Image (tube, rainbow, N blue to C red; front, side):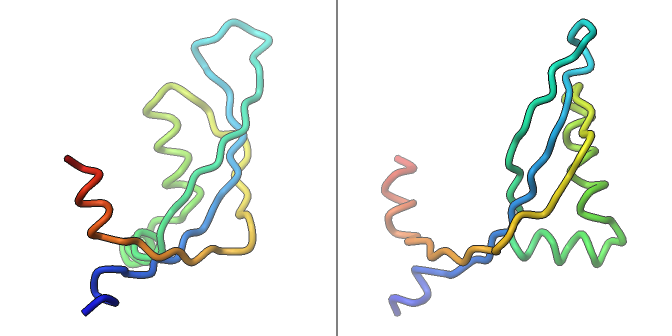
Amino acid sequence: MGRYMTPRITLTGYTVQYVDMRAPKPREIYTDLYVLDAATIEALGRTGQTIPDFIRHRYEVAGYNATSIDKTSPRRVVSLDLRELWRLAE
C-alpha cells in the first residue's frame, strides 16, 4: 500500500535567461530555473508543442522575453509522500 502513497516523478530542469520588457533600457538579464515533470513533457509532445515554445509563452504572458532556454542535466527522480502533502495542505 505504501508505494501508492509515495509516487515517483521525473523532473527536468531548464535554465531560462529572460529580460523584463517593462523595464527601461538597458534591460538586465535574469536567470531562472523552470522545472517540468515527465507527464507535462509527454502532454506537450502529444499536442505538438515544443518545450522551449511552451516555456517562452509562459514568460511572455507575464511580460518577460525569454532569450535563452537550455535543458539542465541530469533529470531528477523524486518520491512524493502524499500523506505528508495532505497534512501540509491544512
